[in-house]
Length: 164
Image (cartoon, rainbow, N blue to C red; front, side):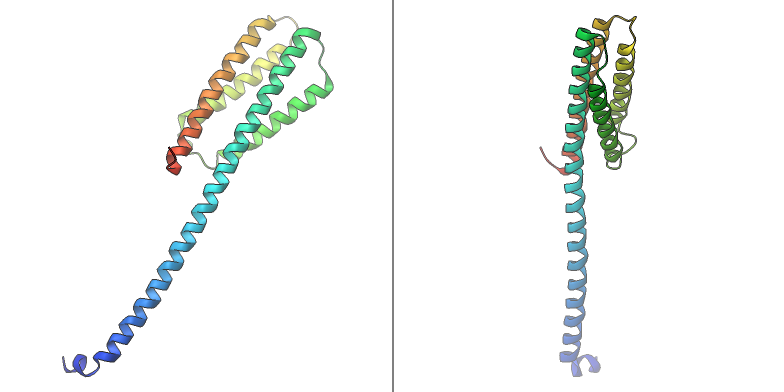
């Protein structure tokens, strides 16, 4: 007790210095975490918007190819090249977005299945002996399902980010 009474000023300064150092350390940690979460948030938003735009681009290429095949019956190399590029872009962003979505998310799994079904439908459409109108309807139905799944994925991200 004598020690505290004798050196109370020095003890107060020491406690203040330790408190200041701890405050600086925690402020640094919080700022670092804030910057990291902000960067992740921006990256997620960027990949979501790119994913959606790539899907819409690919979907429009599928529609153009279907209309082209219904009217001409012959594949255009330029259209096929554009379609394949749109498909590659969609798949690339699809793989990038999987980094941000938990594997147990059923909406994303369903979107994967829809994407594969859309590609199969297009390849069926390439065959000459199939009913092209029924495949066109199938593709349109799959596209509607895909849009619903994409909306659910965007809703998932909105909930995660606290955006209403």
